[in-house]
Length: 388
Image: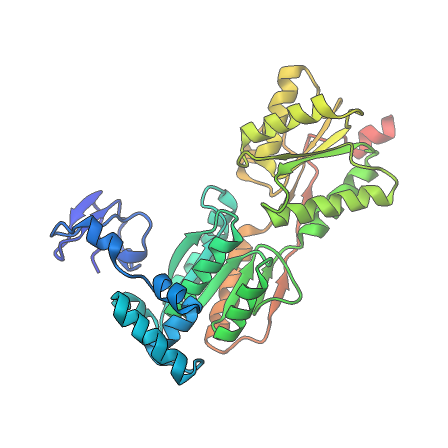
C-alpha cells in the first residue's frame, strides 16, 4: 500500500496515485479518489475481454454467490454443481481476483457501505459518525452507490458477499426479498441505517419516516393549516420520502383535509427542483395550497426563492416546510420549518452496534432515534394563530 500527501505521486510499485490525503489506510483499490495506470501500459482491449465472475454465473445459470462458493470450495453447493461451475470457469478463462480472495479471510477488516448517492449531504454526515468508530476498531471501508436502483444494490450485495467482509451497511430497510434472503443466509453482520424497521435483516439504526411526516402534519394542523401540497421526486425513487409523504397525507386526511397537490419531479433533489416543483403546484392545482411540504430543505429553499420572485409572502401567504435540518438553515435569514434528524449520531450508533455484533458482544438489534420538529420562520406561529 502506498500513501502520501501530494496531489499526484508515482509510488514505488509503479501505480499512479492522485488526490491522496495523508495517513490513508484504505487499500488503494477501493479508494474512489485514486486512479490507477499501470507502469506497463496494459492493452485495454485485453482488460475488457477478461472473463468475470458474472460471466460464469450467467453461463452456469447460478448466482454470483454460488460461483464464489464453488471457487472457494465452501459448503452450499452439490459436488455436481460445483464441478460444473469450475469447468465453465476454466473454459472461459475466469480467474478469481487475488484481492477478493484475500478479503474472504474470516478475519477480514473490510466494511462494505452502500448509499443511494454521494451528492446528498445526509449520507456524508452519517459516515462522519461512522468513520471514527470503524477507524478506532481497526476496520476499513469501501463505498458504492446505488443511485436509488434496487437491481444495482443487489449486484453490489452479491459482490460483497463473495468477498466475505467483516460487515455490510445498507441504506434504508426496503430491499428485495432476494437480497434479504442472501444476506441472512450469508451470516455476514449487516446494518440497515437511515430508516427503521422492527424486522431488520440483522441490525437497524434509523428514524421512522412515516412518523416524521405524520408528526409534521399534526404540527401544521395545530397551526390551522387545511390545504396541504407536497413536492418530491418520482414515486418509489426514494422510498423514505414516500413514507414521509404517506404519514403527512394520512394525518391531514384523518382531520378531513385532502392534499390539494402532489407534485413528483424527475429532476434530482436540488434548489432548482424545489423551484420547479412549486411552479407546478401553483399553476396546476385547482385550489391554492396554504402550506407546501418539500422532500428536503434544499427543495424547500428553492420553493422559497420562487415565492420571493412572485411576491408571495412566506409564511403570511404560503407556508413552506422542509425536512432534515440541513446546514443551509444556519445561514438563512428566514429559517425553514423542518424536522431535524440526528445523522451523525445515527452513524456513530449504527457503527458501534455493528462492531459490537462483529465481535459477538451485542445484544441489541434495533434502535429508533428521535426526530425534533424545528418551528422555523416559514409557517405561522401559535401566537399568530391566536391573533387571527
